[in-house]
Length: 316
Image (cartoon, rainbow, N blue to C red; front, side, top):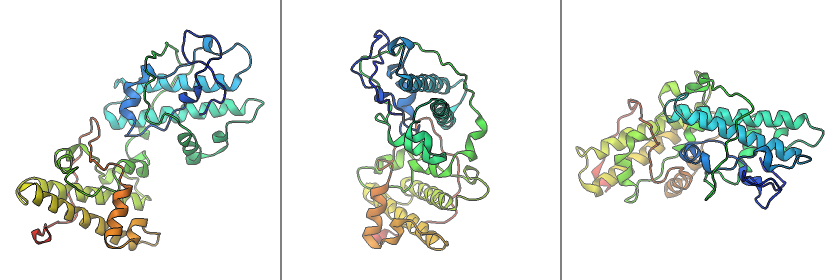
């Protein structure tokens, strides 16, 4: 949330200061910001009662309280006594984030003033609105700042039933699809970090719906299996051949994805509408993980490939 009035967030100041508390706005937790979210909590703003004047500033007080709650709840999720492993922790902090903002909106509507614009939206539109307004999306610390102890005024209990197949599959895919084109720059990571990148077994998806996410997840599964085949040294030898093999696997996986896209009664992925090099450039431009980095603490499950890939060295 953007806190439109300036209040010092440093615990040793009791007056309206020069530090904009819009910096306290928090973005939806994701794979990309999870490590910083858990590591930097002690250096992000808190809003004890002493930093807000005793009268007026009601909106700032509500927003500051929401920040205090969510940071306390983030800490609860990150300590690994409640949730285990990065995927469960991510589920926990997402639930904490939504719970804190839902309570903030409830308090906004109970006031005699105009509620925050994001609170007027419903469902995903509400979360997208708050997400877009976040000035610190990567959850970086404030240099030289140590957060004061501000206990949460509400209890948060993570519901693990929201983990696993109940995580929005489209959200799961944000970190890995589409995959980037293999190159000399990312080849080493492609071969070394495969077991630390996401896979999408059938259990990742609800029993119905999410057909697009299922097609995209299958494309990732195939490609990772084919990358492993290229990298193991039995098929291709030396970086030049391995890169040639990986590029061919990448194009084959995305070509199959596009074939499946066009076989449905819905609009195909925009990159599939392109031809030749334009298609590959489109997918590469949209890739969320161009350097093929692994997910911290993640170990990919075994997902057998559903299609056979045979490298053709004549394409090199």
